[in-house]
Image (cartoon, rainbow, N blue to C red):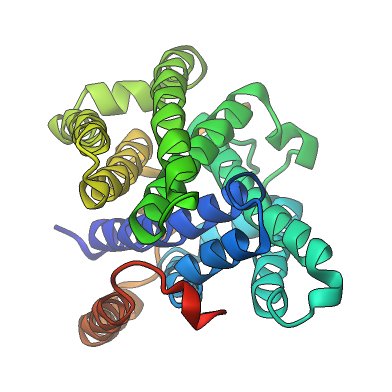
Length: 338
């Protein structure tokens, strides 16, 4: 096991952790105007994610920081090449944060903040999936690893399909969270959305798998050519069945854990599909691809970061456990804003 391979796994863990944790509150935000029909119901949805959403975003910051330090060439290439898309994602996250803080206080602009919360959740949930689709498909790179395409080139049919799959997965995850944390009538609507959206996700997953066979055969060969690729596929299929079982039994905790495990399995498929590439080249020489070996920092940097991670990661996990235990159970409507 090399330090480069270890950091590839650690960056993947951090980004997958973000998808699981911030994924459910992004999904809840997308569902916000459809499930919450009165001010009280909308307040209940905000309160369901209010105590934890900002802590969940720490995983994105940590993942981005780890990518910058461990694989600076990948960080530079993706953040410069996907600049407009990333700025839209950041704008959405900022808009969502501001709307959550102001919605319960600035009642004169309540409708404006409701729209801001929805848009600020929808844009990141969709564009992150589009970015993943482009990384699977490959992007044009020059000899220095710089992206040579255009923003419109990122909006290709395959990446949009992956973006829709990611959006659907987060909506299902968010609906599972709301079913766990709220009461009727919000819970009843969340249960209906959860069941339908999971079926749509399965159909999109099958469609994306077939599309990958033709559009990014390198990725599908990696997944189906290694035991850990098959393991990730089995995890996804098992998680879907587990979540469905929880839905049918009205076991909302199991349903939520099942949707979370589904996202983890999909993250594993994504990692396996690219390895050893970090950003594969498409339409340019294969040698321009950014791989784990040619884009990693030196061993001194990776070792120092590993020591910091060993110390800091348990603290982060401990905080997350404390926060979720503190705010466990159903939302208390009488307590007002979170």
